[in-house]
Image 1 (cartoon, rainbow, N blue to C red):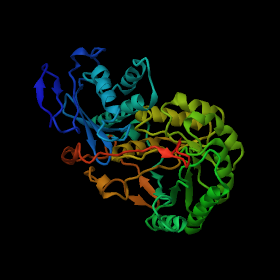
Image 2: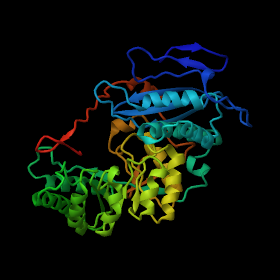
Image 3: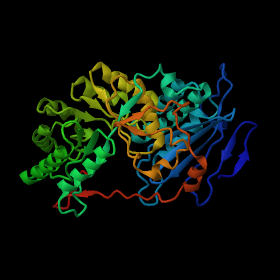
Image 4: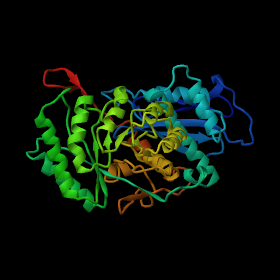
Length: 434
């Protein structure tokens, strides 16, 4: 716990405890750039804590003047490389100090606009991820105050459950003698565990124009997985932005015979202008969006009829408030939404609430269902995140619908966070995508 010192009758400063990087500062609102406003609600945001917890997640807790607590999950950026702090930490501190502490937490759209538009240099992964975690916590607070789920607050759910998938490894760098057979075995295990969809990255790092043998290895891998799961199970392919536009066309043409659910991120966001041409050359649905952070960034690819599935990350693209707007915009272009979610339980709960209210939600990514260490932060784990017939029920409890074990969060904060993402090297020593 950080040390508490009184600043005013209503607010506190929480100082960082030496040696515990899991706790971060909470500032007094005395120098905030916008004044606290008087409205019909008397509840105010008074305090917060941001916890860095294993494996590399950040959980944000907001506290209010009437004793309520709301939780959100901030995307890490940049994965706790070495001993460095995540880039989003300072952004969260500044946004809360400047625009949220002392304010009525029920005014979510107002606070979102304040956090976004008051930044002259706005947008991007750090700014939007910080807004996202705060936004999720505000929705959690509002739902708990009303005794309703976020989906109920936003008009009621369009569905009761959403399909999810399990990731299957390609084993290209695992030293496995037969990567295709290993991937097929993992895919069969997923189906036996109840999944009706899997996702696979079919290649490692690539040359700008790679060899026919590289394409053939991808075909063997994807073909083995498709044979293992049969035609009744969906297979999504994630190119992970590793492919140049030339290799994206070649791989898409070669792999579309296996009827992928979608081909994800065939090029990096810098080259999204190529998506429309790629879409014209394949029958496979095109998906992208985990590295786009607002509706303004999704607009060009939707207007170009370049994608069939958009994949904003609720904890990276401005939270529930912004992701709902992205989903609504995608619906007008007959595009589905499949939210990106490679992090923890709060991000998944926020994603599920968003899926519930989006008529065009297709499928939900997750990485925690089969990881007991990931679920350990959730107190009501028996009631949420249970896979049934390949689907996850939308949590119907108040707010995000999950209960966080704060004692466990405090116990693990700041431990075992290291994650080094080394560059991807090509055969000639140059740097490539990975």
